[in-house]
Structure formats: structure tokens, C-alpha cells
View 1 (spheres, rainbow, N blue to C red):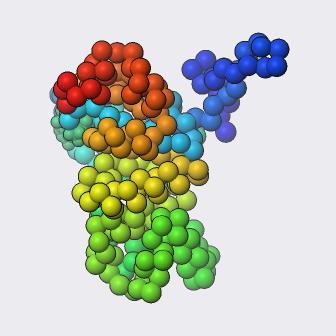
View 2 (view 1 turned 180 degrees about the vertical axis):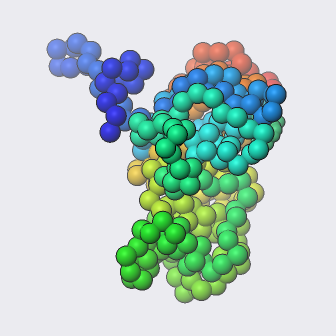
Length: 277
Ligand SMILES: Nc1ncnc2c1ncn2[C@@H]1O[C@H](COP(=O)(O)OP(=O)(O)OP(=O)(O)O)[C@@H](O)[C@H]1O
């Protein structure tokens, strides 16, 4: 664990019985400092900094093209897979700079899982979709170990009861909402520290969306979750903190209540009241 005790922004103030404020360290999972991202000559993000707490949901909102997904992809080095993308600045996950010279991006992506807009199960069985990650990362010592990981991951993703009789069926044969929960199970199976979600409900109907939102709420007890969403009601429903982006800048970040009820910046206010977006 990193000692955050000297970082003023990492302190929550509370009051003792004497009425004097005391500082309590917040458990931050991700810390980003001065992050800028370029696609070729074009700059998409401008010196963004944020602290993201563990065991909670942080939502990134803002108009199309403001850089939400670009910033999210910095947290597991997915931008490395885009040839023109260049990331500057520092991102610490659990205190370790994930852009350090000794860091393997494949390991980063196991620690920081990602769920995409469109459910993307592998063309394999339901069991294999979940077993694949633990197997390649050597997380199971035996067949029964692996089975246990698969069952637990499906249970945590709220899918087990629906698929327990057809684990040998194709993952792609599930409904859209089930496929997305399968992708969440797949992400959980490698015991990540963080789960990134890039508009995870945008391809789903309202009932499947409600299930995923419930699941997100349950998962936050154990994980740091960061979600990009276009849907402000969804951000208000599922997140504890919200960051508003505009034209590549992080305009404002605070508790979700504060952002939606009393934003400090006029651009945030205009966006959440639907004046642009
Ligand atoms: N692979 C890429 N190559 C070139 N430019 C890109 C690439 N991906 C994103 N951009 C540009 O970077 C900027 C930020 O895009 P990004 O997708 O991060 O925004 P966003 O806020 O997530 O948008 P949306 O809500 O529409 O998904 C935009 O101007 C976009 O055109």
C-alpha cells in the first residue's frame, strides 16, 4: 500500500469529539497526474489529474468526443493498442506507475479489467469464456480450482443460475444482457483490482440495463469501478463520484450528489441541465 498521508487531496476531514477536524486517509486505487493524450498531432486530453477511490463507482460524463473513453483507456494501457496514440503523465494503480519501464501491459490489463460497450464474448463455451483468463494467468492449480473460479465469477456476475445447466453452450448464444454479464464474469475471474466499463449498457434494453446497474452496485463492495456513460440518470443512479469532461479537459470532479445538485462550473451545469451535449 502507498502511504497517502502527505497528499492533501487524499484527505477527508471529519470531526473528533472535541470538535477539532482530523484527517482520515482515503483509500485511493487510481491516481492520475498531468495526463495528456495525443492521437498523432491531435491532442485529445489536456493535463488531467484525478484520484479514484477504491470500493466505489466513479462515473465519467461529458459530451461526445470530450475524451472520457480516451482517459478510461489510459488506466489499463488500452491506448497502447492504438498506433497513433501517445500518453504523457503518470498513472498509479495501487501506488505503482503502470507506465513504468518494467511494467508488462498484459499484466496491467489483468489487474485492471475492462468491459466494453458491445458485449464481446469469445466464440467459445460459457465455461471457457470465464476459464480462459485464469488459465493463461496460471491462477488455478487444478481442474477443480478452475471450476470453482468459473462458478464463483458467474455467481458474482449474477449469471450462474441462468446458465448453470448449459456451461458447455456457446457464450454468443446468450441474450445481450447475459453476454454483458458473462463479460463481467470474465473480467472478475482474474481477480482484478479495478473494473473499467465503457458504456456497458448502451447496447442493452432497459431490463438488461437495470440488471447490470444492480450488479455494478453489488460489485462496488469489492472493486474500484470506473464507468463511462452518456446517460446522466445512469451516472446519478450507479456512481458515488462523478467527473465531468469537456473538450479534453476535466472540468470538475466531486461526489455525484454535488455534481448533479450543486456543480461549481457553469459548463457542468449547462451539461447536466441539457443545454448542450
Ligand atoms: N483511435 C483514435 N484515433 C484518432 N482520434 C481519436 C481516436 N479515438 C478517439 N479520438 C479522438 O479523441 C477525442 C476524444 O475521443 P473519445 O472517444 O475519448 O471521447 P468520448 O468522450 O469517449 O466520446 P464518445 O462519448 O463519443 O464515445 C475525439 O476528438 C476523438 O475523435
